[in-house]
Length: 303
Image (cartoon, rainbow, N blue to C red; front, side, top):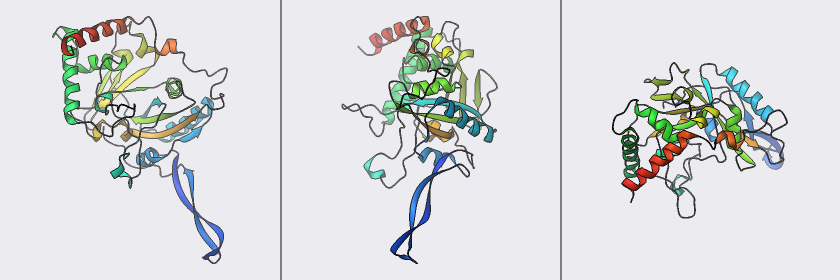
């Protein structure tokens, strides 16, 4: 996915210097650094490096997203909610670099250590192995007679957590994104991404190295989860069995919000979070079919 170039209108953090009285300073003043929020001259990298503009209610989040949307009309806006803001340059030898948000697809994410934390990197051989698993799973569910593009099958595997895929879950529902951000957590993050306007159910943007999938137009009627979540998927194009910067959706991040429900009043009587019964419908027949297929896959390839 090609990065967004140029200036944006979006809140980001900036260090400014203001005079402070001091006996030892020049003319009795020293310049004191202060971290503040600015909106003009934002860039994707500045947004990624920020801590997330703080909002304490869903109504406030709606207003802030509206400002970003109306001021960046070249892009269609999509959202993603996470309880944690994962950042790059976390290894010791990167300490001199500014950490920035990263959002890679599950197929490119490092494995977890024994203590539950993520490793700093993933081997290329592991990425290749995951792509091989995807190919084997597609062959298993289709009996080697595919009726759709790989993106169709990857979409189902991704949204039902069957296998890691090269796609990332996003939504056009701000309510869904905020619900995921605060899922079993008092705080979280809502990201806003500027993507090209889609033209088809599966839109390929060759110049931008991107594919965008509208799940409601792709998955079967009885696939309830992606429909209730107003789900989309996005990933690099062409899909190659490698990990690169083109996999990082943060390249398209136009806003980052830190949502805070510490006081329990982020939601109100009119704007409520999505119930878990809607985010993860218990009677989803497609989920049952895919879980059965995964069981067969594990028996065949991971005995």
